[in-house]
Length: 243
Image (cartoon, rainbow, N blue to C red):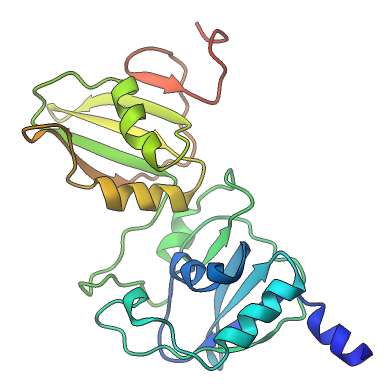
């Protein structure tokens, strides 16, 4: 009984995948079906690509291990150029991961204010490829929006309405560049930004194809918004405390 308790007291799992490299976001979708995933860290070992998945407790980790060990990642979660990915799962000696930054190799879903490390996102090892076989864009919690076909005014309130449909918008800054209008939109974490980017790319704010959005990830992680007007807003500061 004591040996079994020692074995199951670990709330961390080691995920080995010898055939393909997955991003932290994609692994989140695989394991979150069994409970809240706190943290993910991926790395290269002699045995191949591995990941540490941290759950709330050992019961959740045990359920995930029992259900997924020896199974394959669902086909719809894999890019077209990647073959089947088989999971081999065991318990880790770690109990709490120390995640220092958000990137495609590490995520802390309990700390939305953790900074994004651009150099870590791009990585020095094998690049992460998208379904088209091209290198994926480094992710960030801040989106850069370029707006074309500007037939109507676009203010921070308009952008806040559009982007807050996917999560809490913390800050917005609008500026002009190369004869066009652009905006930076800051979310609490990379995951929300990724969902918003996928959903809103090519979206027209107004009917008739007006004010079309083109989105990319920004190098910024925390916008320095000083003014409070139609072109910049810090929604983390309560109303009435800004001038």
